[in-house]
Image (cartoon, rainbow, N blue to C red):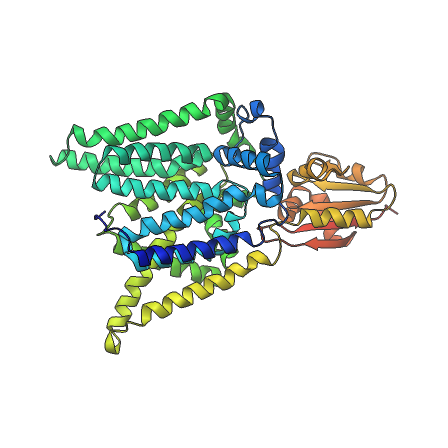
Length: 487
C-alpha cells in the first residue's frame, strides 16, 4: 500500500462530523429492552463472580467484550444502555478505523463515503446497539487489516508487533476473530513463498511476520488457558448440536447471504436477488480498483469469507450472517470503489465529463441507507418484556404458562416468572391435559418445526392468539396464545 500523506485538517473535520452523527444515531434507542442473546449473555456469563467468569467457556461468550460489559455494569449499574455501551463505543470506533483503512486505498472522498455509509447503515447501527462482541470484532479486524497492508508494504517491527496484539484481542473477543488473520497469513505466506522461489525474498522477509503471528498466537493461548478444557469440549461437540437442529438452512452459506440482504433491505424475493447481483458487481469492480493501491486487500477479504465458510461448515456450525460482520467495512469500501469506477466510466460518456455523477450517486446511496436504517427505531430487537406484561395482564387465577424451546429459559431467571418450559422431547398432550394455559412462543419459526403438535393446534385454530410482539430481529416476533381446556 502506497505511503499516504497525513490527513488534512479538513478531512479530519469531516471524519469528526461523521463520527458525531454515528454516535447520535447509536445513542437513540440504546436503552431499549434487551433481546434473548443479550439476556443470555448477562445471565450465563456477565453476572458470574469473577472466579467463575474467567473459567467458564461457551461459544456464546464474547470474552473481551463481556469483560468490558462486566466492568461497565459494576461501575455504572445494569441499565440496558450500560450493557450495550461497549458495543456502541466499538461500533463508532470501527467507523473511524474504516476511514483510516479506506483513505490510503481510495483517497479521502472514498474514506468519507465509506465512513458515512457505515454511520447510517441499518446493520451497523443494529449491531452497535447489541450487547455482543461483533462491533468489537469489526474494530479489531479493520485495524488488523490496516496494519497487515502497511506491514506487508513496509515491514517495520512495530507494525508486526501491533498486528500480533490486535490478533490476540480479536481472538479473545471470539474465536472466529482468528479467521480473518488466518486468511491474511495464508495469503502472505503464499506471496513470500512465490517471491522466494523467484529469488526476491529471503529469511529476513519471513522474520517479523513470524514474530507478529507468534506473539498473537501466544497471547491468545495464554488468554484462553483457563478455559481450554471447556473450549476443546465445546468445539468438538458443536457439530452434534447442529446435526439435530430443526433449522437446517442456518448451516448453509446461501441462507446467510439471503438473510443478510433481507434484513438490510426489509424485503425478500426478487428485490433481494437483484440487490445481491448489483452488490456482487460493485464488489468485483471495487476489487479491480483496489488492486493497484492495495493488491492484497480484496484477496484477503475474499479468502476470509471462503475460509470462514469452509471452517464453519466443516465444524458443523451454523453459518450466521453475523460471523461476517467483521467484513462490513471491507464490503462497503469495495462497493464504494466500485461505485467510483462506474461513475467515472459513466461520466466520461457525458458532456462536460459528468463530474456531478459521483456526488449525486453518493447522495442517493446515503439517503437510501438512512431510510432503511430508520427501521432500527420502530421497535426493540425482540419484545420479550412486552410478552411478559401481556401475560401478567391476561393470566387467570391458577392458569399455567408454558414457553417452548431454548428461547423460554430466560423468562424465569431474568424476568422472575414461574412459567414452565417445554422441550421437544416432552409429552405435549400430557402437558396440555390438565386445563387451560397461556403459551409464549419465542422464535416461532423454530418452535413450529420443533413442536409439531403445537403447530397443528395453531393451524387448526385450537389456540387464540392474544398478542404478537414484533421486533427487528430475524424470526424475533414473540407470540402469546391462550389454549382453552379440552372439551
